[in-house]
Image 1 (cartoon, rainbow, N blue to C red):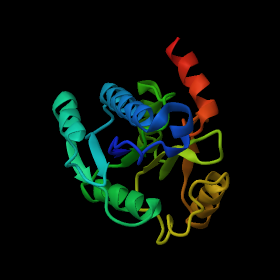
Image 2: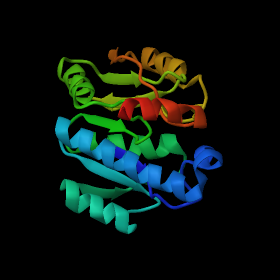
Image 3: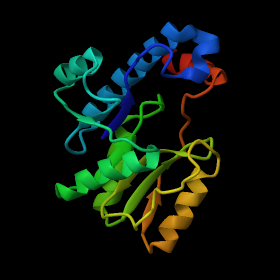
Image 4: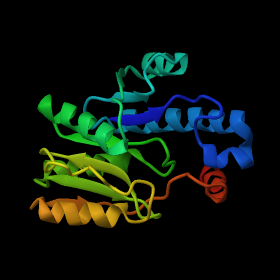
Length: 198
């Protein structure tokens, strides 16, 4: 499952607007979504869905569905934790593990996503891809998380990964962590993106 915001100028990648402008930040969002979908399509660990915010009506999302042969889903209302919980519960209810990623991590590779799927297939209850900034770029579940697992999480802070570990331990869940990756949030991250393309 891929989470993505519609590439509307002024509403996405707002921390990058000082460096790129509103239209440039929206164009970057489109490229990141396309890159993420291409990587996920190459990995194909299971059914690929694009969970759209605010909804799938944006023409860009419709074009993505045609290009990549994926289904579009609507992210529910609520904070990030509520939306993530619903998406993962949906996958688990359909009888398969759920792996959820966003579009902010240009460092994703198909091998990384396959490694996440293998970690769940090997008997782990969860898999995490830590982010260098203290959050995570990937979460996967093979069984439902404990109640309130995502509630009250300090999203957007350096404490997210550590708090997630604490909650996994409290829930007696077995998990595996993949290699840390970086995500693209701040103007200083743009240089790493240019290096990645080189």
